[in-house]
Image (tube, rainbow, N blue to C red; front, side, top):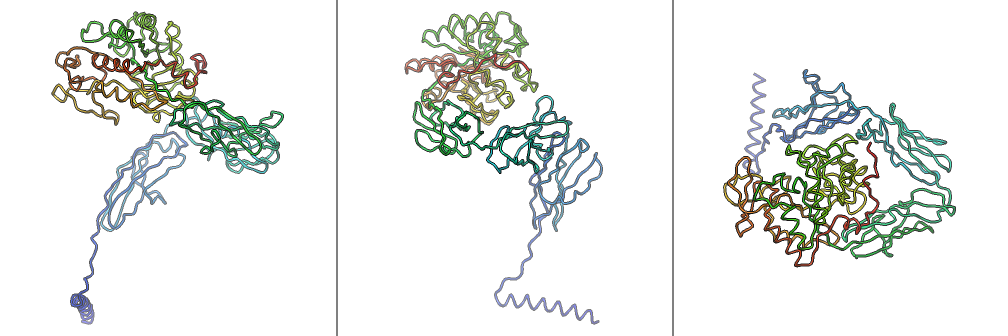
Length: 594
């Protein structure tokens, strides 16, 4: 009976409080409704080499805010919790092959329920560390100073295995000590820093400067940029006897024609020659910077095949053949073009139409006719198109330096440039080891230097504007084609005026490459699985679309060429662009095959 009285008393109190609140005009207490967790970010599977770090990320919404706990399943076994893994980011450090096949998931919980993320798979490949590269490779410091180092690991084939600093043991000789990756020499002089990781090792040079710098040497000694470009310089100090005192870029003040640069990066929008001066205390040095203000227009017939760009077909009346129609027309305007040759040292006699399953021994003869009769030059095009870029260094050489040597061997002028496609596969190692020393410039489709890295010497990669034929399918069901999106770019048929406007709007110091594939005429039959469709008979360029974006109406091409001729703009050959940007040190024999 006493328990009932107590319960009734409590109920009465609650009733009185609620009633009092209502009478006083105050709001009654509200209870927030709990919301069960909902996964908003699923963890993704990871594929990497042993020794690297695997990172999984997940997120969920809910009220109250869900807590997170990560779980792991070994060999499709039961899920087990991972101690301390209570954030949305799980890092599995220095993975081993024993973890290959593990699955990881995040479990989000709150008072309203629980949500499990999808399972993310960890795949671990065996990679043998064969070499360690230390950076900086060469450095100079003042007495009493220290230098932090970074170690990058590589496998026997040169594949970058990533940062291995934390697992590398550093030492310094002849005197000094290293704490982790930070090394401290004890006396002035020259030192060697060594990094050891298992059986792999690498070295770096460290100098403790004691002499007073007498003069500086700036690098690069000569540089070329467009008006909106810039160049970053470095400074090396030397004493009065000419001894190298090391890199002093960090303590050097750089200026251009007396105006201070942005750190070591100098720029100018004024065309012509400029002087870069570096000053460190009483020591100084100079370099030359040229701002190129000319505009360059190149005409590139990409993948110049059996009749230069006619898809290896000579019996199609609707194709304007380059050797019999287009080249003579360009010659009448005083223009010459550049063709790309899809070849490599292992693919010489059957070089051009390989991805069309055709072998044509006359290909070289036709290319030589375009060169000798009409003044065409030629550049190389990867013979692996349209497959992925090779990872073997020897095969990379075949597709770069070696392909240019084959073109030279057949007596074709040019071979100084490369059409880098597919650009998404060309890696930075191939750029620095093969493309830059063997070629003056390199072209990419559209404007994608960030996809593959950037050459260290201007003019870098050049913009290539394809004369687009239109859509890639006849899905519109009409003789007119709307925009189509490819690789994030919206493409439509480029009518002649649009091309002309782009050339006129070209900024100073820039190159636009008009990239043509197949020039067509007339009106094609209705589309079939083996026949492309276009209509060049209409007066409206919007009707000139093709289901294959590599088609462009010859009449529109002539309109663009005539506009260039009337405006006094000429077609620029690649060598002229190279010369304008000071690219004279390249040679397709500069690098032997690995």
